[in-house]
Amino acid sequence: MSELPDGIAEFLGSAGWAGADIAPLAGDASFRRYFRLRSGDAKAMLMYAPPPEEDPEPFLKVAKWLSEHGQRAPQIIAEDAGAGWVLTEDFGDDRMRDWLDVHPAGELGAYEAAIDALVDLHRRPAGPFDPYDMATYLREARLFTEWYCPAAGLDVDAAGFDAAWEEALQPLLERQESGVTVLRDYHAENIMLLGPDEQGHGEQGLIDFQDALVGHPAYDLVSLLQDARREVPRELEAKMLKRYVSASGAGADFAGDYARLGAQRNAKIVGIFTRLHRRDGKPRYLDFIPRVWEAMERDLAHPALSPVAAWFDENIPGTVRADRGGKLA
Image (cartoon, rainbow, N blue to C red):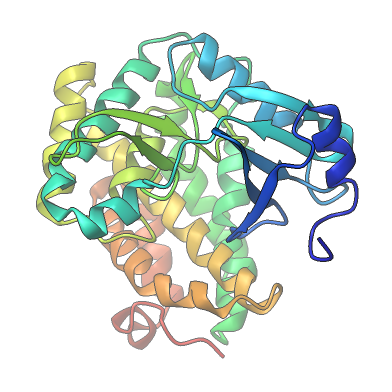
């Protein structure tokens, strides 16, 4: 029990789980910690989001909203948000990425189900969340110049970077209108397969959605199909994009907006992964940068990104781009 957080026994006792077996699980890129609980035949998942670094209230708010609107978020069993404790339903071990490593034949079915879930979410009115506005898009993209460029020893035009993004994103913002609920980390590590068949069909559960905003429907599609942690074949990306467009009735501008948000998200991720290495001592995230960079280059090739592409041409040396951003000082 020495490695467990202070207060865990008291919280579990108040939740009716005193004496449960506690198994710590591998963490993510945040300060959150996770534990699997078993008590007889019952099982549950415990999240510890310690203040002041973490606040479980956004997770609770989004989880409850998703459950009330037809999405498969984990049910909340007990909570003490002020102390950082949340006890939820246990979705099991079949995380989409890991399951597909063992069952590659189920790739198409699993991605089809994930696309269909997005279509369903986007048909519903947006949730009561903050807007994905220009300031947020720019703040996120700026992680590239704030973290990656210094780490790569590059002296770049940061003001020009912001201006290029603002020019590229303005048409997209005008099309967001009332927006949709954007989960922001909708990808194979955050989708749980709940009893899938061999072809990947079946119910899917959502996790790690506490940063939800109201924004453009292409964002979560990019998260899924340009996955930083899992190689999504180009053919599958194109097929799933077509499936979404057909089912949702997305307009002619959608392909350009998909590229805009792909480039924006991938620039952000390159910055975040660099920060995780340099600030937080987590160098394993550097291994993902070449995949993210490659996707970003594909997005930058779209005419919708011409201002940002011009900035990259002027500020990021060809040797860095040829190496897909993989070498850092």
